[in-house]
Length: 419
Ligand SMILES: [Zn+2]
Image 1 (cartoon, rainbow, N blue to C red):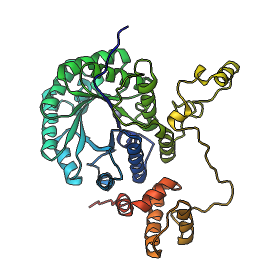
Image 2 (cartoon, rainbow, N blue to C red):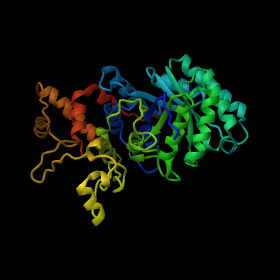
Image 3 (cartoon, helix red, strand yellow):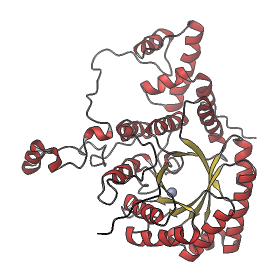
């Protein structure tokens, strides 16, 4: 049997705060986006695509998150902004968010999109030139890393993608993002295609795969395998619980489990992140709460039935030895602890809360305020935060607000700015 020794690494770039939130009919508050970044950092994920630095209502949130990184609240997670690969977007990005260091810039590369979107106004050469100009502008304005995205790569000829990826590398790009924008790829052909692109361009490969055919994780994994076998690092784009456009994106927890337990990957050191899978349960549940979308009963790792057994043969087998019917343990994804549910009197704090209730709630969290002045300041932030999220604040959100009042104040400041 052919055994590969993977010399290269696989990193995870979570795009929930960009691809997840841009999805039709699902929303996330800026505070919740921030909490996701904090949780992703604690989980050891490599990078978060935080959002759109060219979009006015994202600017304070992005700058506040960059402040969190400076302050050391976000320790290792790279915070990266997304914009179109046109020089004017790059300039606006740095005008709005001068401290941003990581970017992904995107442009359509397939004939169908070039013709359909630009209606004859752009040729293939124009696409290449726009990408190179945008990339050079980003580097000149201080970007440390730039990923270059080929939108609709899966419907773009491989030779063109090699030309695009090579031009990106030659002009200072850190990575080439292969976007299976319509979720049209299959694991076997993408593995071969990514191998060709990686071997020819020798640029690190980023897999961005959608789930329209139910194969987002399989396709991401196969592409990443093609990349690392070709001597470049691979990056996989994920979203929490798979939230994303249409049928969603490659699910974060599923891909970590696949990289850890699938027969092709187990026992190999390839996942470069300091990933703590035990944080999965909390993160998935928070995202579900914040997005207001239930976790499907059969969700990988974190669904209610992921470790449930009832049928005679299965229950008997699992009781004798859980390995008969389980690939990994509930504890591996952070499950197994009992959770407390208040069934009696409860005091909460929020949008219309006062000082006494507020102090009681924070006392229970082990947080005590110096004096009334400080307490009133945090209470006001709690009121605004709750106005902003429109759902009960979680304990972690309350702690975060008390520990980072100035930054939270910036996150909550969203001005319309219409002239
Ligand atoms: Zn996408």
